[in-house]
Image (cartoon, rainbow, N blue to C red):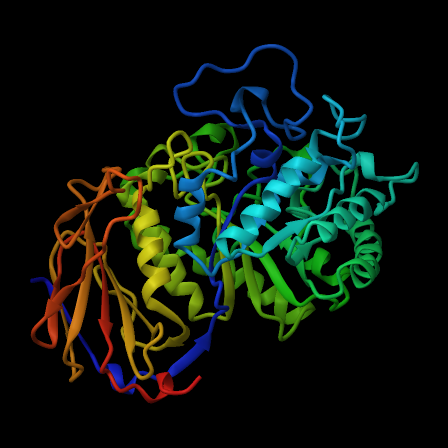
Length: 506
């Protein structure tokens, strides 16, 4: 073995606390309404005029039509319920320009100034899904040109009708951002020339509106994207000049401290679909320390903004995935499960309360195959996280290094117990040892190859049963206080008898 890691689970101090719904997911508004989302790799490019729902400044060839998602699908609800408790975020660039048709006979085309139509039946489907799977809703307002007066000022008329209907059908909206990704406001449907002063004015209207319409919901913001302490930030020179970039510092300043959490998005690169924008990555880098650490660099950038503009507010990462523009071809393979779980481990230690993965179903970076809802490798990792990792975050005392990404939380539902997440992103086995704590249990994920779309649990294939239900996920008992982290593997270890004092009390 190339190295070993020694731990003292009983002595690990508490370093943080995450939301009970820390691990959450996105269902794009575009999935709900149907429309043009990221075109699958290898599919023919669309021809004809640019559709109304293609974001400003983006090439129509990047997109392909998707019918509305069936949120009543029993398999989808079963798989989503297994990740509860969670939040479901229904937002995205397309939410900025959606028209809520408050009628039982909705128009077939959106009115001028809008890009899509959200019907009563579709939003009822969202609410029914949310209630059925234990996932309160996170969302954002329609903010495009159609929602504005002649001077470009935001009017909440659309939002008033939508939220009134939501209340009438029992929708649980837990948190709201004013606009999806105001960093790129023009691309998101705002008027040309929309600037920080406009955002400040509109956010003030939004804040008052929220107090009247949804007083119990959290206000999140600014919802910025693409800035980083590294030079790879996808909003740092990677978009055409006519799109404009509104810095998070200016946006957060305009919020005047009136938020419950500082929200931001993270993508470490732009996928191959958007190669013209630069900021690419490769599959060869997918296990590298530079790639895995990019989530830290994004958070470091926004932490500095938070300290200046929203001091003391917790972080919510309201959108993240393998890469922007729908993900690279390997986003649904085992090789990206390392990034998915490593990001959860890293951010939990740094005052990030919620992480919403993009997406649950749509495109390459989804947890489930969008055609038949087959779980992808990262779904199985998400399932084990949901079952084992509690809300209290511990310090393992192990510096992050290749083959030695080790995170710890209190074991869910077990006072005094500790759950470990040990990621070996190296090509060599690593010994993991700990003091005391008998009766340990191991769940080790591996795959036939790193590019596999299937995964093994303790050497056995993981897949839905013939009846379409989730299989048993049995652990491997560990007789001693040690195990082997196989090369290119991800291990969860439960130590129910760790006796950690920080885990004994709520």
